Length: 103
Image 1: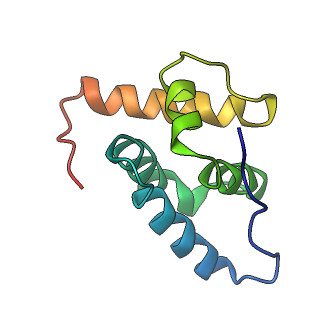
Image 2: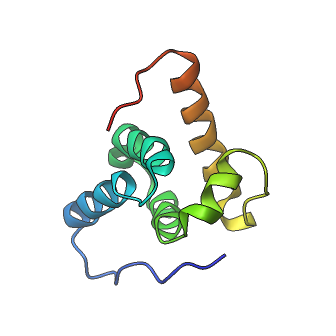
């Protein structure tokens, strides 16, 4: 698994949230768009700084590595594990509630 370094700390908080939300919705695979996009919409504004850092790292990770983690097919790295569990739970709840999956 590979991920690049998150953006420099000089980025304004508002711009960072906009960038992260856009990146969550524009992944490259429809599956990850539909998992990370709604999670970002629901949680980014109230996410604590340490969790934002981890989410930013997740956004810099390849979809091919992330999807098996969300599906529980491969374990997430220790640094991602807690947040990936939250993301996977959010996705399952949306599916079980009958929420339409739209982009």
